Image (cartoon, rainbow, N blue to C red):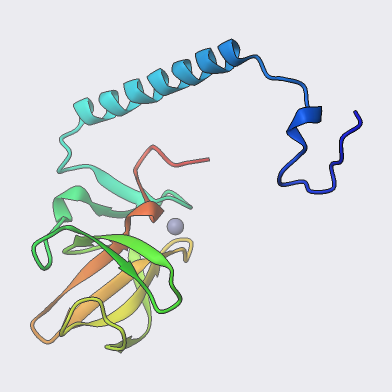
Length: 155
Ligand SMILES: [Zn+2]
């Protein structure tokens, strides 16, 4: 093989063997169909409200969809923190599988009037979101990317 391979992230495509488009297309279709089937099956078996949600990293039970609540008129919210990291969180009334770390802070809070504390997976310590609290109540904001339906843990 002659072409330069100095930049490993973007290999010189012209020097690489040409893939067989038909075969790739077929593989892609089969894969997609299998995933669609899996999703359909899992949503048929259980009512969406009861579905337990687990830590994506270790599989520990964190909360249930039945704990979903709305805050400021919506369950899901997308926020950007001061470090410019974007999070999509879902609001839950409780999250038994979590432990909170650090003191409560109102700095840069995403929900006016609420102080926040960092919430970690009680089992593996993965950052799962925040607990928002004020004198009249509290709720959890879970990073949705860090949760999976139990039994569908990513490898
Ligand atoms: Zn975990």
